[in-house]
Length: 239
Ligand SMILES: *Cc1c(COP(=O)(O)O)cnc(C)c1O
Image (cartoon, rainbow, N blue to C red; front, side, top):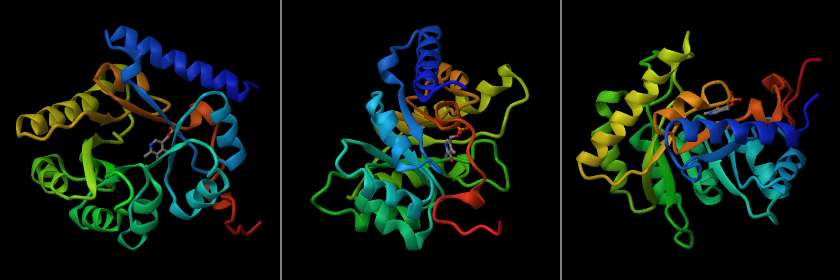
């Protein structure tokens, strides 16, 4: 069994190799360690190995870890589905939100961001593969929506995020990431100074980096397979 240190080293080597292959500086590709379903001790262990940014998808679960690890210098990224009635804890406790997909939640996050903190860094999530079941703004509405989000005082619009449909081969894996990069280019042409492409996970981080990812969100390749959601810590199971 590989240890956490082995997996961390392997992921960092993959990121470095992909950055090298695309002629990019590895320092421009940030690793967000996706710690959903993992406990505070595992987060602390990865932090001791040198990891700074962690991604969480479920607010209640995340807040337990944020509280337990409040003494550590960690950067928390919210990457999960946003419910309008749960924005406050995110606005107050996180540094980044990658999954903003509609104006209503953007307005609430902005209004609820404490004035004592810097603006909340946000990415607009895009339904880049056009899947009916997926979260995210449609590509055609991205420029208009991003323009409105960028004007909100409590937020700093950093860029775009996507979770493409799984690709059948390495060649087609790059296509949705390229489409997201082109949408970010369109935002810059319309005057929005975005600098972030949050794309690429355990199985496709190389393709994403080749297309310009600045943040890869990696869970399984770092922590190993996730337990099924019904055995999340604090969740009752029928067993
Ligand atoms: C779970 C999750 C990830 C990490 O996925 P892995 O395949 O485990 O690397 C990345 N992004 C989002 C939005 C997620 O929900």
